[in-house]
Image (cartoon, rainbow, N blue to C red; front, side, top):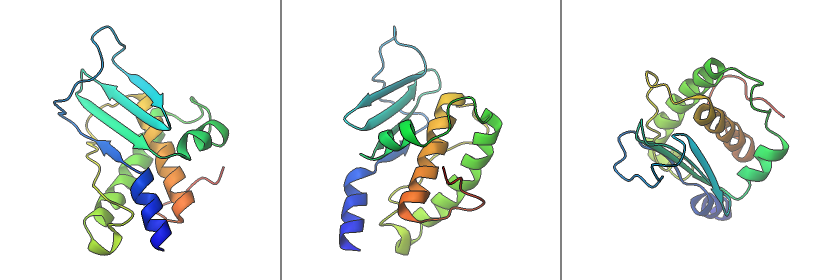
Length: 144
């Protein structure tokens, strides 16, 4: 259990911050940017001022080898799953007995259109998280 908690603490940082004041994407860059550096996935959109950072050594490999390709599901499908799973994630993040796994709540506003790519990556991270950590955030988790 100690190794499990340590590995989780060292490999996972998930941040979705609406109204982020730290803009690190240049103006000439696309508004939706995905950068991968040393197993770090960063998704940002300066127009909506949000950022997601996923640091998990296994996620990129899992995404490339096991996730469904882009276009397999619709954006609405991702939004519905993300809304349900993030609600449960946030409930657990606020409970002391779950804080080793769910270190911080995710600020996902269902009325904001984050676009396909953000919803795709967030959905796949949540599937990956549930499979690797043997957690169920609700509903059916695809077993790719």
